[in-house]
Image (cartoon, rainbow, N blue to C red; front, side, top):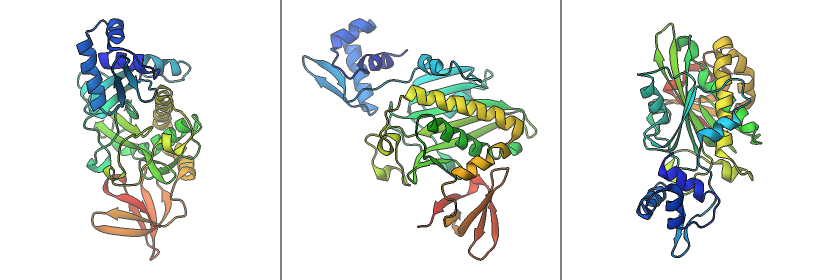
Length: 325
């Protein structure tokens, strides 16, 4: 466990702790404590420093913990092979893909408190202040080939909504192909990357970001409407419990998808579809297709009926979907 994480564990109660006390507890110098505190402040945490009192978090915080996540998973049907909790990582997806070069990583989970080069779909950056949110990737080796995994991101979206529902977030919706919405604003997203043969096996690394508390992020830092759990609910979230719920439901999703494909998830996905019976436009390149979504294929493709009565089929990698007010 890093010095930063140990300090956060001491400060998690929201009380003042002196540099001398922290140093004695951790067996490090006061200079090392001060350096770690500055790193945490730069990462976005608000830590008050008061002469004669010491250091205090502006609000209580529980760092992510492999041990605590595993405790929440002790009764799960499918358990992760390994959980990696990192203070800082370029990308949780890249971490698992890099690890896969030297070992089998199916069932491995990676969580980052801070992500330096987080990616969203279509090359967008994923914005998330450190130590406040969920930045998680999970690896699974399917015996299927990539062509048979077309609806996996949609099935994973259903798993995420079910994980949130267990924590009393009952009104989350899905936006094709990989967004999680609350109050019509983005609260999370998924990114799937694959490596393997055309006929299988295929290693999938699924990355997910959930906005728990976006803190100081301004609205114009993200190019679409967004929100977080803190602002949309009156609930207090234990990030370790949330991470465990996500892992539990995603691992079960992968196992079920391997056996049944997207067809098993399609009915629930359609019931959670945020733009059901609403006018939308699909943007592909510099063209826009206004209309209504009429179906989702078992390969995850979106079927749209345009204003002229013509049907169009879109795959997730090439387009964006927007609601028309």
